[in-house]
Length: 188
Image (tube, rainbow, N blue to C red; front, side):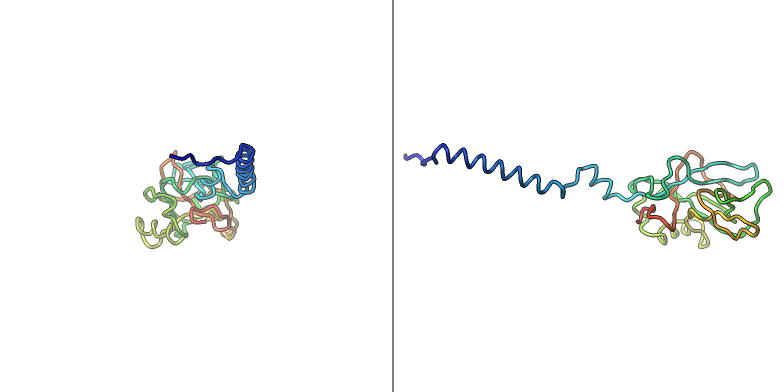
């Protein structure tokens, strides 16, 4: 049986060195195009803005809004999370006594409720979120939005960050809440 001829030692050394050098150069060239697992995960999963209960009135009113965990600009909760949807029915109800609406704590002119928990990624559009509220509470219900609080002489101005409403939603829970002027919804 004959042996396969070997390349001279200096050629083998050069080929090993060249292959290693080529791999190193290729890695350096491709490095900017590769994402670390954390980067890939965070950019691949959209986030949605969430609100919580901030206060409860003694007259069946409740204040919902942003807290220290809320990110109204980028979303604060991955769309893979399962949370209730904050729903609102605007009825035109007058401001109850004891509430003085302002920009940061307006009056919603209606009632809030929480739809059963859904995974954020199932909220593929504002219409999809509104449909969940309508399915559970009726055609005149929709997902609550960041700017639903009203204030001013005839409630002509729209505020943000929180609002008062009639109704009940569980305390200590976060809720998917829409925002119409920032990419902070699960569908963005």
